[in-house]
Image (tube, rainbow, N blue to C red):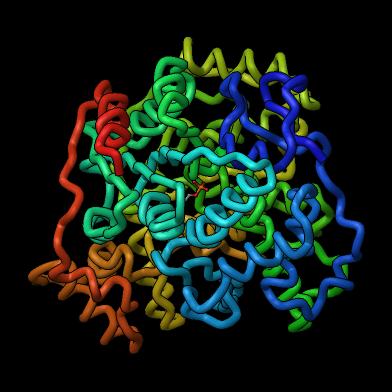
Length: 494
Ligand SMILES: *Cc1c(COP(=O)(O)O)cnc(C)c1O
């Protein structure tokens, strides 16, 4: 199976090529030439462990990988780096099922894909006999950065550079990145928000001069953002895993449809759920939960995607995004895979800061439901769930949980529901503690200790360790200086 660009179906790449390249040369995103349909019945998948299931799903997408190559990537990714043997535990509270995707090394769901992406890229390089070095350029709203650094650190022949919004991430997120060791890494704060960082990185990908400079140095560019299909596909797996878990525990009957709620930013995670549904997973509604940056809510309710609004800094910083890159892949699907139209709409967004889809395209969005949570709701839900169920959730998960409660109340839909739980509450301890009314705290680390005592759990080691670690990455730049930062990093001969 090959991959095509959402903006030009004539651009055709093998899975390995698509993974290495990250983004198409015309700026479009790679999508499977044809969406694969699961040949196995869902019931046949019952009883598989996470890794075996991952193989079953991913083999549909990475068709040029040999079985042992793909299994090897999976083994290297989902091992004791995760603090839970089942990789993705599922916790039932308040009538919903929380799919805990945050048990990897950096405590956010980004680890689910970024712990395997480096191995996919490395395998792809070998398969294509490319002996160039790779430079991974990444924009982060806080969680991708550290997960990518963790995944790519000290991988031979790969350098990684991360751009984050200087004032747009939590203290813990920042410390995680700035204290990261690894000779092949660079972390740079930009004076701007996530959209600026992501636009900047996309521009670098389209900068032919830079590409030439890099290629003179025997370097290829690639991406660790969810625009890379190698990041999206591993995320499909856990929706199957969650469904199968409900089936095995007799919470649902064979074939019964469930709802999925996803706290959404760049639209990668929920798109993976949509792909799972396209493959045959019985999903009823895909509930897209936003924070006060509610562009997507408006899009699902009106068919207009309009970014002319204030960018808000919220307590769920990893969702503080106005331009959700992966929506382009959904637009491509609901336009019946019209590359020309997709290109036109994306162009409208660049030029006019908005686009409108046709009523026919809107019809195809019936599987989606969009809503958002206000900041005070996010806080209230954290406190309420802790009080009623002794379960601590982070701010992003609380956005999803808040939207879920409203949805259930307003529609009366009783479908069993999986809520994507995207970060450990300890990763956003300051906001979680504030929601619980904890006051007079010296710093974030003391807050974590209080939270641990209250919830009768341990602070995850990877966060505890941060205290007192040396800051290694001190670079800050303006938006227009990103290119020269890349040149400097390359020139440093690392
Ligand atoms: C990245 C992130 C999100 C948003 O996921 P997208 O795939 O960008 O929509 C939600 N929650 C957390 C904790 C994240 O790190």
